[in-house]
Image 1 (cartoon, rainbow, N blue to C red):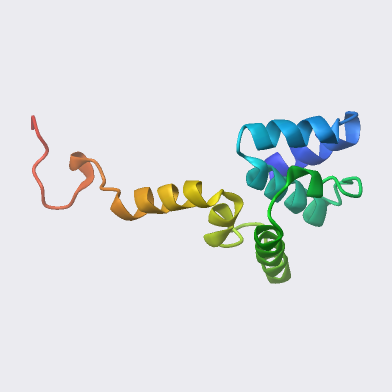
Image 2 (image 1 turned 60 degrees about the horizontal axis):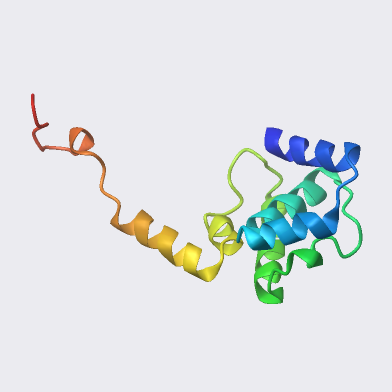
Amino acid sequence: LKHLFDIAETVRRLDVDWDRLAACAREDRCEGIVYTALHVAKETLGCEIPDGGLELLGVPWLRALLIRRLVARFLRRGSLASPPSPLLPYASYRWGQALRSFRVAVTWEPPAHRRQGEPVPGR
């Protein structure tokens, strides 16, 4: 929640160059993450984003729709205490980033000292 307030206050207090913000987000390949953060700040805190501000990010319409639907579903639940959906981060990523993140999540193994029933090396 603190990060959403930071976003909303930054937009409110600074003269954001929306074209430059969008260009930097696209260049850094994080336009979906920026889109999601701004959209959530807008929907939860009333962060004022100029008309076309989100569209400048160039997020494909289908992914933008998915993000908006996931956020709307989250807000209907009425709680900011839990993540809106485990799908929201994946919807924010580019397809290659989402697949890589999902593969890491599925194949991740805890360190040896945290696995049940296995001896810890050196102990």
